[in-house]
Image (cartoon, rainbow, N blue to C red; front, side, top):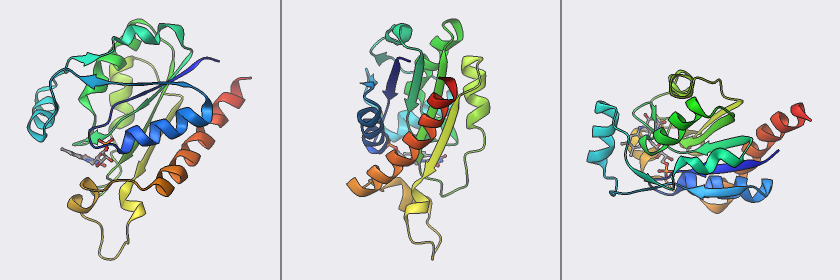
Length: 177
Ligand SMILES: Cc1cc2nc3c(=O)[nH]c(=O)nc-3n(C[C@H](O)[C@H](O)[C@H](O)COP(=O)(O)O)c2cc1C
């Protein structure tokens, strides 16, 4: 099974998580970059007005792969906008895919992610794993949005979260052989 890891990251967390997973799976990893730099302002505008930013590379790169593993942050309960073009591509070029994230989690569990993924691709994910920064922090007092949004994963946290992700991905791969 040919696997590709596709990541977008604004502050680096999802990039290092994706790197760790790609390394362990010996999978190709591509990093989505945006043509115009993202700011908190453009993030909010994209989320409110459903905009899809121009990105590099072209999603056509997915053509050669059987399983696409997307990594990216959650913003205001939604998938990060730079992933949208790639997710839309799957609608006309269906293949198995998953979405994995290290998001903040301070406001809850981002319950709309699965339905957004289905709406954009027309396909159910084979894996959806949203791990939370909130769970890495002391629980008393309860971590706030400010605590989670400025947080950068340490190397040992990245390793732990990547191992969890790879464990889940391997279950999917093993179920298919
Ligand atoms: C504008 C903005 C909105 C966010 N909204 C959410 C949210 O709704 N749910 C959540 O769990 N995390 C949210 N976060 C936290 C990010 O998902 C989290 O910091 C993530 O680790 C960032 O990933 P990155 O370093 O790969 O960009 C938000 C962060 C920003 C900057």
